[in-house]
Image (cartoon, rainbow, N blue to C red; front, top):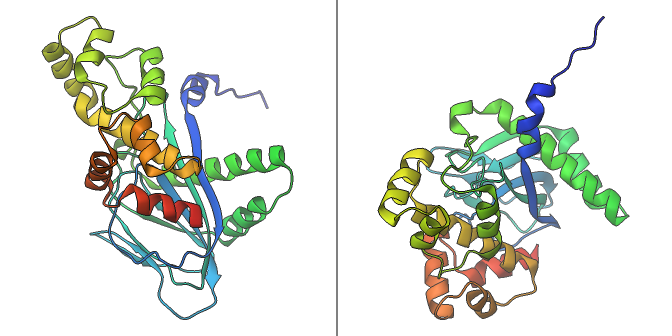
Length: 272
């Protein structure tokens, strides 16, 4: 048998950028099912419960009772309710996946997915308990990639955002993901491209399916969520880092787009 190569797929493969933002194991006693959206993707691996209270994930179109040996995928920015009883044990992985373009691959997906895979759930727990920083980190990325592969298989390609953002250079997109603040304007983006604001906005929206303003909002939310989940910053410090006028305006902005206050979001992440 002659060797078969798939080198022609490597360009796309090498452009994927996976960022794990959170990895936790245990129980969480205050997830009450209130619908909300967060700017990262969520994987919940259900290990089983020590009580008989109901735990579930849901959105406006579906309802999934959480079952042992199953894992659930909730896309970034998708409004969903998660209810976890005090006895529900789970492993949680939160991540972003883009093509180095600032927009998550799953940002256009509008549904929750359920997978029955006891082996994968068991593996998630084993990886969390793996000693050794380097081994743990590689295995964590590995299980995230395996789950992402399963998600891709279950979705129609038209549901995925697999096009690269056009109208901005890769260098500009990377800079935005690292430095975007509430003070960043559409005019500044236009200046990066050496075109006037109206022309830039019109072309950007036509080429990418979202407005430059919506793109900036997503960049700010992702930065905010990353800072909050690190545990190193209090809410007022995140507001200052992102150059909001004060903590109140930052909190109002965050709740408007996610359904939760940054204080509630930070507390939840640090409890897991």
